[in-house]
Length: 177
Image (cartoon, rainbow, N blue to C red; front, side, top):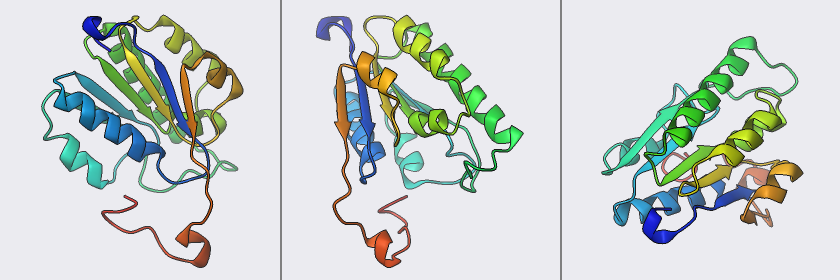
């Protein structure tokens, strides 16, 4: 993560189970607690006050940008403005990562943006490969592409065993968002 910690790794949190963003947020909390500089780019999570935004904005050395819209993206009916938001998110990620000023960069829901073809896989792979060696990078979201999995150093798959959504329980403020 930093020069004293050696080479930054590439981590992926994926799968259909709950906890991908939560795992990334835990890593952010730990990194911030050790004085590391952190940046998180939220893909597909714009225009809505998720609970983590207010907490993250108060942490020292943690910066963030959010792209997307409040409504969920329908993969069968992608709007041009959704694609544009994802492109802007990737451009922001590229600027932050290549700038080398951050120890940890999180690309939240980038895997879903890739699966929905909002951005190009080759562009994300190039970004991963071009990052400065000290930058730790976390990519979250379902549907992680096998090519990303191959180049990652750590991949954790969250497996859904049971989820209250299956019985009609709605997402709860402060727990799921």
